[in-house]
Length: 91
Ligand SMILES: [Zn+2]
Image 1 (cartoon, helix red, strand yellow):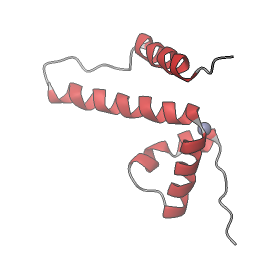
Image 2 (cartoon, protein in one colour):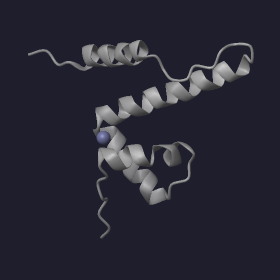
Image 3 (spheres, protein in one colour):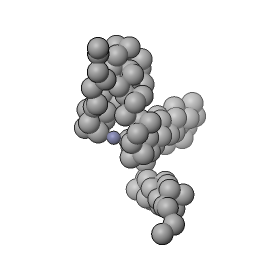
């Protein structure tokens, strides 16, 4: 019987770009999906990662617009604050 090895958050983040590019093996892909379904932190990280990529692509479609060097800290803090508010379980 093959047991599904649980990956760590560190591994998840290290292989995130390969995951998004579909370059992982089906087994690794399954481990990622399993971790994602069980780890809100990494789910949030993945979401902000995808948002960052989308923002970057949108910026590139408008060649006259300045390309942001990085996602503003305020945006990241806003996403985190919203996520914490929505996921906080009442006592
Ligand atoms: Zn995780």
